[in-house]
Amino acid sequence: MFQTKMFNPVNKPGTIEKKEIIDFLYHNLENYGDPKADIEKCIEYAMKETPSFGGFVLVSYDGPTMTGVVVVNQTGMKDYIPENILVYIATHQEMRGQGIGKKLMRDTIQMANGNIALHVEPDNPARFLYEKVGFTSKYIEMRLIK
Image (tube, rainbow, N blue to C red):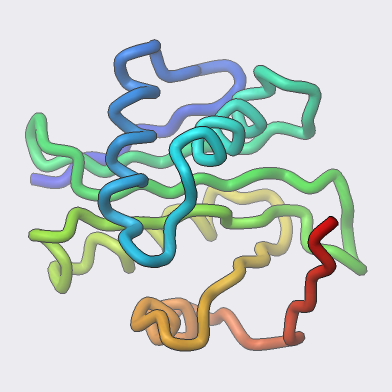
């Protein structure tokens, strides 16, 4: 049976749990992921371990097996920029198609205070899940990397 655990600035993951979350995201985000150091920074932002507005991490388990992870950062903004950005969501490679991602998305929507933005590559098949739970494409994001 799947269980979900929430971490936030008041209930932080321990050192081992944090490493397991980082490793899980690194391996299961596949082509859509980031280096472990960036994933760790994102989690530290959510836990307010660096100056930030905080956020939360949801972890889904099937017994002792981690099955999915979501990391949300709060932006400190409202209206013109959503209050939250869903930075990472991943399900276990061998457990996809079982509704884990959909449940995590619904839990995330329920737990987040305010609107949520997320960035998704156009070819990412998870895009269809995001649309099913209510996300729409509002803009094309452009970046200047300095």
